[in-house]
Length: 453
Image 1 (cartoon, rainbow, N blue to C red):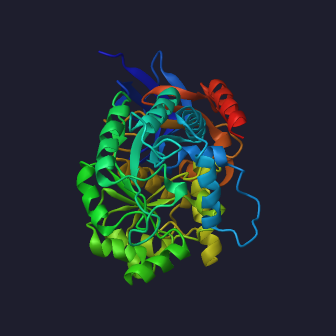
Image 2: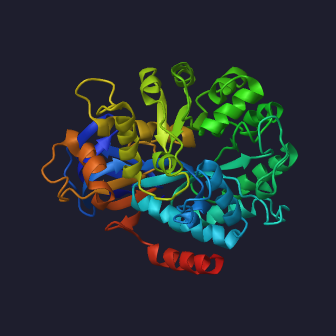
Image 3: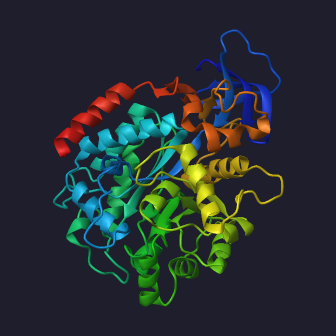
């Protein structure tokens, strides 16, 4: 039997709120004991403030290599669609080794900012000429290797992608590395499960890429193929997508999805940016999670999520880093609130009750919604993975703060500079704010990028 390790914190954010002098007992990567008002014992690691690790529910790891490459104005109005053409050209250059290096750096940066599990929305399946690798999950295997090297928890979401537009439009040349028919996708899914089988507590779900990339008949096949795992889909991210969906079906994307598919708590609707109030309320009632990625949504000019109607209806949400143009968990939360403040010209819009904290409303919902979307248990509680973050309680933005202001001070003031440690399954992978493998991962990434660019 593995030994029991003890972690002691002056203050900890537990499932039911703040507690002082908390001792966590960890064995086999999981929390087996939570003691409050307990003095440390000999051998305990002692730290300041403990938070549960945040789930990152939406990532395209390879796009970390694109950061900074799509910030030049084109000959016409730039948008998501012009950015996508740059992405297609970039993805043609990436093989398994390059993907592993890019993913490893992205995962190091996620861990350093407080993300402890990632939902990898993975659609670069085939070789550059579009033919499947001998191992259909060759690229997924590279992602699993990156997760193993860095220690991050992985929920792999192989993507079904078959068409370039609504109504079954044939895919374009830039999509040749993504496309599958249902039979090929079933083989890919089986191989993907094998690729992550040796990772601790890895999960596998699946992801229809978007309503424009699947036909209704194809979409109807996928829930059963998920075998109970999470199901994610991009939906209503851009105005043009809404317009094209209306032209094809007479309905808006979220409206069409809820009318034709039994969406439930297994689902994560990524972005869902352009919803009317009635769509937002309907989506909330399904128990699905909204996957919000405010840094990427701002970078691409997508628009602002309809938070007031969704939150008023009890909607669940989590956060993701999507294009990985900037990876920072607290910045995603901060920008999520700030975007709503700018759009609605008000303050503290995520709390639903007078006197409640924005930091608490954002953080607690993102932990719960992200864990649900990635198929795991979240929070610092017995039975959950020992995935946690420590904040330096001597940081200037945290010094002297009462417990009920710690999350506000971290998210809106201190940010990533206050993170001094991160544990994944009880193993410390970030020490003094720096990942223990950063130097080696950076070197491999630099070699790959020099070769690619």
